[in-house]
Length: 216
Ligand SMILES: *[C@@H]1O[C@H](CO)[C@@H](O)[C@H](O)[C@H]1NC(C)=O
Image (cartoon, rainbow, N blue to C red; front, side, top):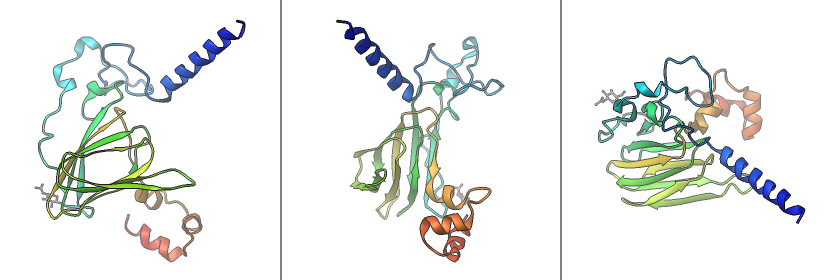
């Protein structure tokens, strides 16, 4: 069949495209991020593997609660390539989230990672919003031991819906998931997005925009 090789090639092209839609697979045992390297690559440059030590793959202290004394009553303790250089190129990360009573992780997205969260303590109301035009909120109240997934790139939030502290643990499909907090991106950018742009985008007058902006 003359068409067969074209079909095979198309399939191969598709598979390659899928493989590169996310972080590329490692080409060596590991690539400990070298903080001193001036090389700019898509990720961090590798430390000479002969210099790799156990501590490059290690972090302690995730048993300790973060300080939630802030306006939102929540704190994230990230475990990404920034904290563990040995995570470089592996497409995986972790985060501990602590919530004061009614504490909130505000609407945000991870541009490079799907997140899977499990509740270790307390109850959380969590949700994400699908993309345009539906913008459907998919949400649920979780209790200890429950697991929930936030798809890559979608805006999501978590709120402690109990009178005690809550703790959750998240795994993410990137060593450098990135965070875009909706409110700070829109109202807290430096330099600011023009008032006229935000007033028109949100269909309110400029005084409303100034009130939001004053929070940042
Ligand atoms: C928690 O953070 C608040 C506000 O920054 C600070 O006043 C307080 O001392 C911190 N508590 C601890 C235990 O570090």
